[in-house]
Length: 444
Ligand code: ASP
Image 1 (cartoon, rainbow, N blue to C red):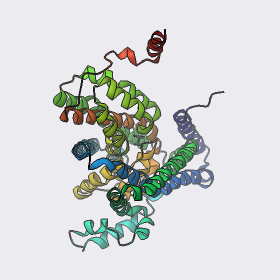
Image 2 (image 1 turned 135 degrees about the vertical axis):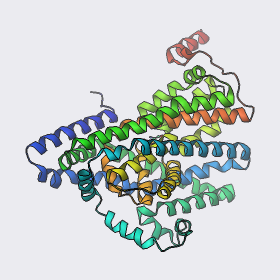
Image 3 (image 1 turned 90 degrees about the horizontal axis):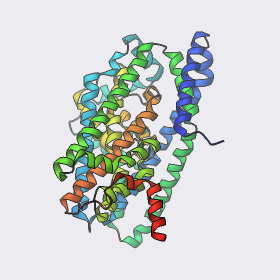
Image 4 (image 1 turned 60 degrees about the vertical axis):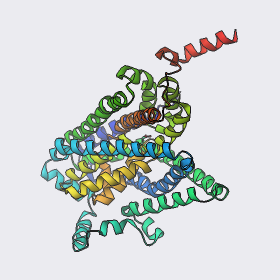
């Protein structure tokens, strides 16, 4: 029998977890669930947290070192990265605006918030104490805090991820600047390391159906209030509205304004890549399709497409960054924490960095959310709250990530006078059936 796709397995795990939780609550098995089911959910979250630092190191160093041609292609490079950073920042700000307007976390009763804080925010009180202790420090202290004095020291605490990212970017720049023959073994090493870490995430994701089962069962048993589920729906809607505005409003508008190409042309060209992104939840897996669509159907010159798109798949994740901003604020709201404007501005920076550091694979955005939470002083265990709805949101945010890459490649191509009329105009030409017919005709 064909194996069920992972997202179905996870959905089944989620459904079974909720059912089991409801059953357990009605049979008064709460203690059993806490003792025997919940620990597996905790193990799953720990695995995700465990992989975060190796993931940043491997994927960010590889991403930066891949920019080796930046001197040759410095014009294209600066434009690409500039526009990528711009679209990502806009996505994060949009997410923050939405979550502050809709405030889904506030739909949770204060009593449930306190319960959640007690259940998940174990380390929160010590964090509040830490925050108090920091008050007397100078205004530039956050900047000083980004620069670690010892990389091993920084790497021992997930709350110090910005320090690790600082070191990794610095290291990547070093790799670009040394002679290619000296850099080669390092590049190969980090390529290999990246593969291994991605494989480890694959393996962790195999346990995801069981992990979500345990997490959801524990969630239902521990806080059986309906308001929590309503709040989760509100949170999901916030993310979806934000992604929808990006995919159907912001990107086509950018394309129209800067290249003159209309809505229909853009979606006819890019939609197959969007569908693949939706079903694989991975921009990396979608990359070959994205490149084909952008170069053959949207008219981007191969020289531009082959440079802009692979970099985009690694560092440009608008959907992921929007989701991280919404999720961080939602979790804080759910715990009844007030986030200051300063903290929210900090989230813009960390979500930008965290999305750059997220690998283009399923679930990576949630792993990197740990950084955003850690840096904003929000209990990381709050991940458990949003895990239940993560997969469908991952599918949708990957669509935004891929659409953004395609948009930026069109803008860069236009600015370099490398946007042509597409080779293939007809949507039907995409279908392999027609391709097959064409080949057979040629062969004949
Ligand atoms: N799955 C996303 C992608 O590949 C990354 C994430 O947000 O988890 O683009």
